[in-house]
Structure formats: structure tokens, C-alpha cells
Length: 324
Image (cartoon, rainbow, N blue to C red):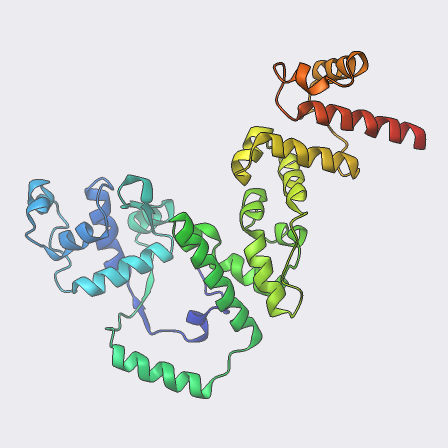
């Protein structure tokens, strides 16, 4: 928030900036005075003193900030409020009709009149942009890091559209820059990148790692056998069976199948969060007395797939006892 990263396209081609403190304070004040119950368009109409019927019915024409920003166009206010969101002064409450919410940082700026710089608004001119883009393309060759960053942004945008969320909720630009710097090519490498936890690793590692592998000239496919490793990652993070199933959009019995695989491969040795001692002993009793009917007998008593886990644990204990 308080300094440039020095790596992104904005930093590499910095815009002209100005002291936007007064502009910011006007917008923040408008958001506060409507109790954070209005979206961007309504806030702009309040600042510009619009005579909209909805605005009047809500009494927004009576608040102190009504019309205080008539000197700026709708497009200018839209650009500056967007910058305020990017700077962390405002948030958008997508679960509350896209209402603007002032952040703790924004309140600090408003109360203590802290200075804020904004990029000067430049009216959009399609012809100018096209000429500039063409000229830039002719004289500039992107370096590999910039090419990879663009590819990762494409992946992020596709995921954001699928999940119907803003791209930054998938991964922030800062995290994308870390991906460009570290270029992880496995799930484990991806999980260690700053800004990526277990949940995001399981959800997003495949498309991002695939893009990185392609950029490095490696085999793009990461294989399907890593699904059990995703389950292991979530288990270690404290997720229970139902949570893992929901996170991965699979059935709990499939999760138990992954656990059996992990036990057989000696990747999992702590079973306390998966099965109770009583459940384990019950499976062992039935397996001893009715070895051919284990699953039929136990299906009404415990989750489907759990008896297989118990039998895998028994094999694990015998295997390690023999080796000790």
C-alpha cells in the first residue's frame, strides 16, 4: 500500500500522479455518511449532486457530501474510486449488493488526513490506445518473466470467471509475481509460495503449475496420481474428511480411498483424526470373525470406506513391526 513493487506494468510504465488526498477524503466521507450501503454508481452520483429519484428517496441529497465533487466527471470519479479500492482504502462487499466498505486503512486516512497519491485520469481514446499498442509491439519484445506473468494472469482470469469472483480473490498480483520469481513446477513447490495456503494450493495449483511448466519447456501434464497428495496436504492442515470432500468436490468414500493409498505408500502414519480406536477394533473383530462379509456388516455402522482404512492401518502396523 505504501510503496511501488517495481515489477508490474504500472511500475515499469508509471503514470503521472497528483496529491489526491482531498478527492479521497470526499469519496470516503460519502461512503461513511450513507453507512456503507451504496455501490460505486450511487456514491459517484452523490458526489456529483445527481438528481436521481432513488438518491432523493433515500435522502442522500441531504448529506453534507452531496454535490461536493461536481468538478469531476463521472469517468474521473469512477477511475479514482477504482484506484482507492486497489490502494486498500475501500473494499467491495460482493455479498451485500456490491456496496463500498471503508477499510481500517481508509478510516485512518479519513480521520488523520493522511496524504494519498492518485494517478492522473486520462480519458480513454480507442484510436490513441490502438496506435500506442501497435507502436509498443513493434519496438518492444517482452522478456520471459513478462510473458509468464501475462500467462498467469490469463489463468487467473479464467478461474475468476468460472468462480464468478474478482481475480484478486484467486491470487493477488503480489502472489503472481512470486510465482514468476520462483516458478514452482510441483504441487509441493506451489504450496510454499507466500500468499498460498492449503486451500488455494488444492484448488489452483494444477492450472498455474501447468502454465509454468509449459513456459519452461517441461512436460505440461502433472499427472492424476497427485490427488492423494492433495488429500494429505489438507489432512496435515487439520481438515476433516467431510471438509476435504467438500474442498475437492469429491465423495467422502473417495477421500478414504486416498487415505488407504497414502497408508500403503507409508506417507501417513498418524491416524487419530481419521478413525477412533473403537472403530478400528470393531473392524478388526469383524474381519477376524467374518472375513468375507466385512463391508456388508459394517456399512450400517460406520462411513463407507472407513473399514478399508482400518485394514490398511493393520497392514501398516504389521509391516512396520516386521521391520523393527
